[in-house]
Image (cartoon, rainbow, N blue to C red; front, top):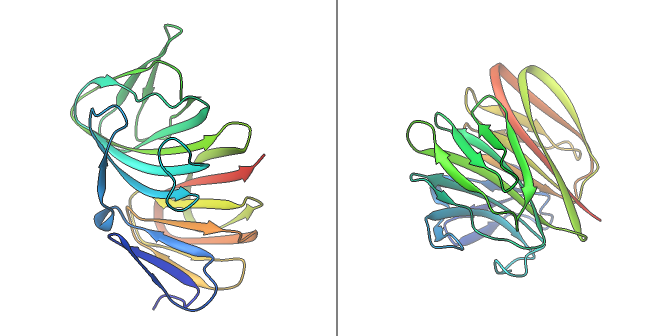
Length: 216
């Protein structure tokens, strides 16, 4: 049973249990799709700050999109981005300086400015990505892929922390306050203002994306 300190989002409604809300469950199956900024596809906006912000004035944003055709990325001036693959056989990024970068499911992460002109080309069929964005000068972020089996302790010193179970088995996350949250495959947990040690427990080899979003 979920702790009464966790907030769960279902479709466009938010159900709050208890008074304190240190974590939010992020589930792509119940997140409405919205069009890309450039109109070339759709994305699942998993979390945004401040609540109700638009694509022009957000402080930070976490999203996931399916890329089914080749094309250019949307332009986000003043935004720092990190992009990783959750599913699919690979995505080639043609950078504005002529470099080509390839993302795949084994942990490559692309870091770039939102104003950079980038074109994406599919390796072999559609892919699903995970995208972190922060407004430069006000927020910054870091994204890592961890390979887990057994128990792992993570340090959280950020205002917001993302835990995303890429595949494999369900995980259990022990929050700094002592609550334990279940994290199914292909779901995430967002911790807000919950600094301290976070324990991750996985009985089988698993992949976990960890994102830290910090002010400054």
